Image 1 (tube, rainbow, N blue to C red):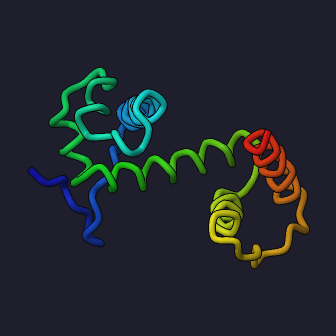
Image 2 (image 1 turned 180 degrees about the vertical axis):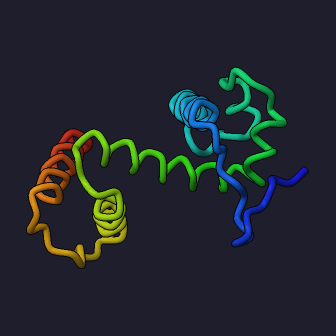
Length: 126
C-alpha cells in the first residue's frame, strides 16, 4: 500500500492537525521506547490511537514519516521560542553536518532561537 501523493510526488502530510499531532506523538513515543534501530511502522502503530492503515495512507515508509517528524519537531521548537522555522532548520542542519550557519543571527527572533539551541546542545552534552 502506498501513501497518497501530492502534485510534487511526495506523500501527503495529514491535513487534519489532530491526526498529524497524534502521528507525531506516536512516533515520539515509539522512538523513545525502541530507539531508531528497532523503530518500525508497527511500533509506531502500537502507540497510535487510530489504525495502522492510516499511517500508510499518509506515508509510504518509515523514513517518509521520520522526515515529517523532524519537520514537525522544528516547527514546534520554532513556535516555542518564537523563531523562524527555516532558521531553526538551517541551524540544526549546520550542527549536524559541522558546517556554519549561512544566515547571520541579527534579528531578535533568530538570536532567541540561537540561545535556545545552545541550551539544548548543552543539555545534550551533560
